[in-house]
Image (cartoon, rainbow, N blue to C red; front, side, top):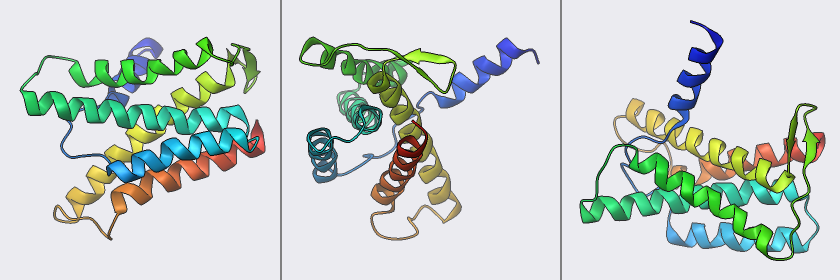
Length: 168
């Protein structure tokens, strides 16, 4: 397998598949949204704010996919398109008071920290959702503990936030 094929397979593996359940409760979604606003006002680095915003926007994309399922609107690539468009809404942040100021991240990525954080947040959220579904399948279709679906992404985003805080 050449490098281009490996990259293609990695990208396809990250694409969201079938939406099988509501990814989080509405109260948790609102809490994440409020947390992003509070973090920004407290001076948390913008990459971490972007991380949580990306996860929130991904969650909203999952909700939109569930809405489309309830209406019977199905077409190839729908979930990836909806989640991609949802995360792309981070661009609206640059119409307000935020300026697009790209920086070198990890020495080879030249991107605005908010945008970088949003992309990483999307990837983390999708991977954790896939992990949760795998864990649930291995446990006979049941969660291991109450609110596991909420705890897993919050813990994963918390760990990535600490990594961002230490290394960015």
